[in-house]
Length: 145
Image (tube, rainbow, N blue to C red; front, side, top):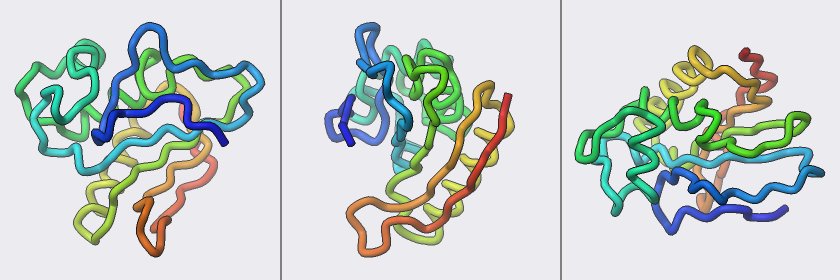
């Protein structure tokens, strides 16, 4: 298990042109996004590389981050799963779903991702890393294309 690309402690990151560096031998990749990004304004203190996020999603700097913008980042070819080898399984971990309200938001994000994502995602995991019970829900064998 290798952390290939950190987000500088922010709930969301858009990758720069030179990242992430993912070996071709990678068989599974977990893309992580913090559900706590919902409702935050698009600015650098909330989103690492906010200008790239803006370009990929169409959201303007200063606007509130919604489910559509997060979904676009997840599904965009230059977004969350950028550079993933074609045979690699993609797993989405929606992190920081620490209570019922956050879990509901994560489920809404899941359904929107399933609606618009042009690539297959093997699993969508909803949970909270660092909590006693990390995983709240797993949606398996998601087929989108």
